[in-house]
Length: 103
Length: 141
Image (cartoon, rainbow over all chains, first blue to last red; front, side):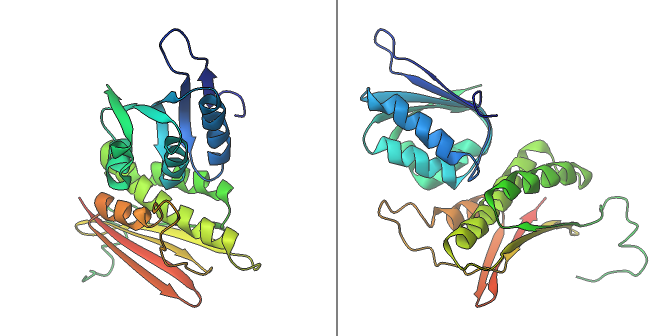
């Protein structure tokens, strides 16, 4: 599961780079997630992170997203229902990132 | 809670309790979630409630692993239990490592873990002792 769970597409036209995550994100792979976020943010002042295929994430992923949001404009795409919305609310990540929900 | 002898164990609506003991390492977290995801439907928990329970327990277990990683050199174990009660679920996450109080991190994001758990389940009791930490949660169904 090293090369497919976190993917990055390069910036194109007016669009920032997009990091697409899937599956479960926890302490076991959050460093890999952070690495991809940092790579995407390295050459761009904005990134979009698509979490709509993420089946589990917790505070570990939130910390990684907060870290990248400190230096980069962060957009998040999240499932319209489920626990990720709760996670964003409680952590306050929804106040530092632009959140778009996807059904 | 009163238990009627001979009934509680055979009540078809109450599955056998789940008990998982694993080393407090990051790789154990996925194993804990997999067991819970299999067990919760047997307790007639619907999928959206199951996701809340998995996150609450996952967050507590993640804390246990982080204490273990940061803490002492001795082997730390995380134990997760789940059982059906008359009105819902009783969940525990126990470790034998040292609890670090939820001090604010430089960015102030630690400590969201327990608020998150409280948002997901009905009651959360965190009991730190010198021998480790027990998180007890109740989810009404």
